[in-house]
Image (tube, rainbow, N blue to C red; front, side, top):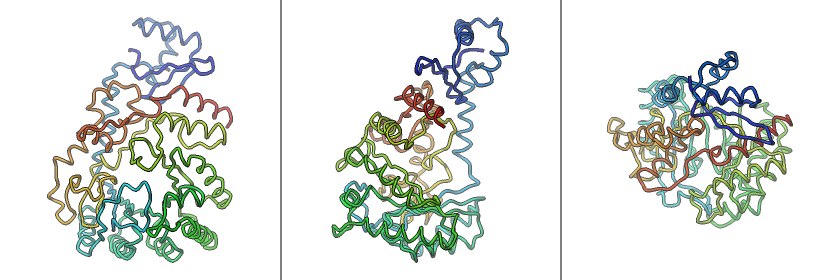
Length: 430
């Protein structure tokens, strides 16, 4: 047995801690354990405290082989990546939008709409796949501009008889009560709506096409929906208000959260931040660097007891949509993509739903294999590999194939000690 290379030693408030990213375990290091650690590091296997040694072995602080442990984790990742019993689709029924957001990265997209031929091809594709479970996210553009296509497609899919979940990402302008109740009847259970702060902040960033504000209409729609859910005792619907946060409106998140927490005591709503980092489209925004984002999150918790990130790592691997074999983004013209950011970019299309057999396997392989962090020596050697899984596959794609310089590393690699300190403090307070 040997000392795992995935052990991370640190000190918080004068107390020594040992963390292992393979098992996600954290222990305090007392004098007895410190002595045993030094013996193991020195390669002395004839140790007196077998019970403590067995405990370290059980939570992977000592291992037979780092390589074997990593490959075992890799096998779990591959099982998830190529799992084919479930099907995950994101469908953009249109690329058109009714807002003129200052930070929009989609303005170059043509205002296309889903047609009946593409709609039928999607139904045929699902029918042939016949997955155990189907998850569809409706995306855009603004998907509700193509409401009739959404309802028509949902009705056809529902007749197939597959266990399914529907959700939608919308700006909320067109989500009036009639539209909401119609979507719920057709199986929608999650709605993501964007508000970037209070009225003045939001309207300066997310105006309508004619320049007028959008906040009042969105807020009224949310209010009507919450009241409707109360009256009808609807409990199986979740509305997520996403606030796109950068350094210029960072004070708005706490205000939004406070307001909607008081407005919705039954917790049908949740308010979550979408942090704009410095590798996004930051021409109109004052974006965070990774370290600035961490500091913002830590200060927000310290000042307001609002926790927007996990202070303790998680090594539960979940494969991203872009690197999952049975996941596709379908554009209104039927083009297939692996990442939401690529919608409308013909160079990033892996094929078309109208002829699903003719996939661009070279491009598909770049997403599934070329972005694989387990094939990247830098990632394989990193102590935080199990925590971040190599980071965003699309960002890895940009770095490897398009000359990008995006930092894909985990926040814990940047500020592990500070985050661990915050975690220990929260544990004391809870």
